[in-house]
Length: 213
Ligand code: URA
Image: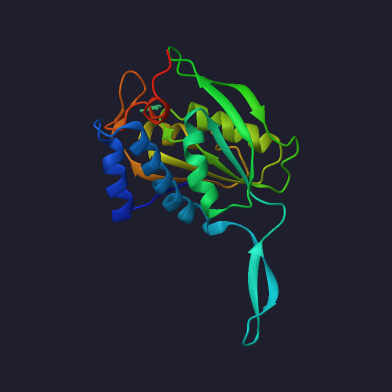
């Protein structure tokens, strides 16, 4: 597994406002959108393309188009949904599948409660959207789910990552033959006793969409 921390002043600038507890939900959603587009630019560096011949007003030339099958984008519900628009702006022809994962707040283990994905993902590049790589349980389960269906190239985009979650992901996915990359805006210090990233930004779902009791 490869982890790519996008070290860019614009990314850190937007992330700083995102972290700030005074940032309201509309601003948080807008900034998430902008941040994801920047991360997606890095994350799609390996997107598959095929050569095409075209003619400009001046001369014939060779370019590229996105290869078939199209990439599949998979936001992990609920908070991953807040990352979808930013990603789709960069890759509007990607297909979208949904994966609902819930974390048991006592055991911190993840399980799937809903999915809307093609049964066969053979030969598909998948982009998983999950804002917080905290314990790593959710992301590890989601990636395994996609690989079990045949996905052969996985890139996860996370706004923030914790070292503990990154280590767990590496360990849990060590047997996979499929390349897995995590693209993230920052590697934070640690997890606290509640499984929150420190300094983090709090509960990403709540900050995007408000608190659900
Ligand atoms: N999920 C969140 O929304 N925030 C964290 O810090 C950890 C998990």
